[in-house]
Image 1 (cartoon, rainbow, N blue to C red):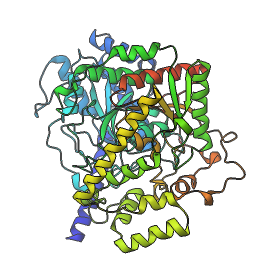
Image 2 (cartoon, rainbow, N blue to C red; image 1 turned 60 degrees about the vertical axis):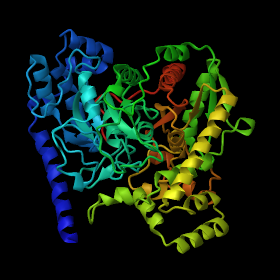
Image 3 (tube, rainbow, N blue to C red; image 1 turned 60 degrees about the horizontal axis):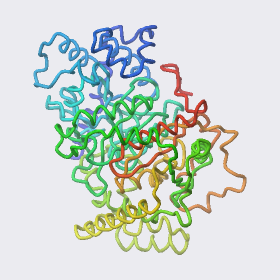
Image 4 (cartoon, rainbow, N blue to C red; image 1 turned 120 degrees about the vertical axis):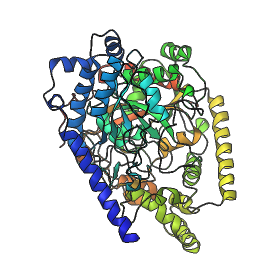
Length: 583
């Protein structure tokens, strides 16, 4: 049984990679020719203008598809960001929609070329179900699971006029800031070979950063759209639960509700992110997914924070576990200084303004997310199937004999004197139902503390780094997997939060101080700083996170715009479309 499953795993991985290449090889010449002047105009046009041109017949949606298809293939050749190649189906959908003929035998909808996303190609994380294509989530055991039916999210996007055309790489288990698996291979950072584009929506961030897409959809359970945006230089919004649909997906952890995963938008530009989010919510996603709140887009909230003369902005300089690296702190300082220059009120979240214990939030989130001890994500793996090094740590620690774990905890706490790491590993194991209920109760108490604290402070938003470091090298998760507090906290709280790129690592500015001693750090910080090297990281993007309260997507996007406007000429410049080469 073991050997037969192992060999089937190898066959399925080989099949999917060969199928992907065959689909690329079979594409018409239009996808492999140089970018034309007309296509450059498509890339630079505002998204609402492209939609209007498709609606009035000025621009053929096939032209848009093929333009972005060229760049998607170029991005894939350099970063391995794509999984399912759907160009052929996308062309059929467009042609059928224009001629109003029915070609989809599965009864799936065709793109509505009169909708608010008419003709816009949309890239999708591999976990999203598209009829006619597998949804592997990086597991070979999921190969061949296509039933021909679009999931609810894809039906909604098509009804809006969007054209799904590629799916993007992610890590097996979906619990990593890398994006690799045996089925599809590893995605790499578009700015530097050998570095991660982030995870678990890393294929998407690499594609967006290189211009192979302008809007995409990913998921976020501990920072999985925000961290990739930070590491690869694009834009993302983590929606609160119930604001964006999540029906019609496949996951590595079905039934996990301790820290619910949310699906959320990503984009190459802030303008595209705002348009995409607004149009989806205005379209009424609750008609496709019963878990979505029937909460229409609140234009008055968006406009109010676009125009508010003086914002009150809390600055979270550290999560108390891993202090930001010089590059990430510099990005946050740049934003804070720009906001100060605009006359906004800045409140440093320390002393009397300090929020509830941030480390306590990390402990609760870590245990309640992994309350099964990693059993569910591991149940789909076949013998010999590669497991991300971070997820392997989760599984390994949870499987230890309880007395051994206790002695390890005592050694870490009293011999190494590392209270941070000790507190995380003390109860790192599968929880009983009773223990899980108690964890959920702690989560709710913690959320209530934050609710009262925010009311007392009267903040509009908080700004922070999205992660302590810029992009880390591949395989770094074996040491840095627990360095996630800056994003994970707001998943636990279910707050709306967005990330925008601000600057890039500069070797001459972002080196560690001469007196830096990694041995003095706690275990979490040591795992992250082990890989921080400003010279090697030179040129990697660095972002900043903007956080609102629950269901405040309109406010977060408006303040992200205020931040980018405040940066003025110093705002982040994305890479020229299609020109980047890996170093």
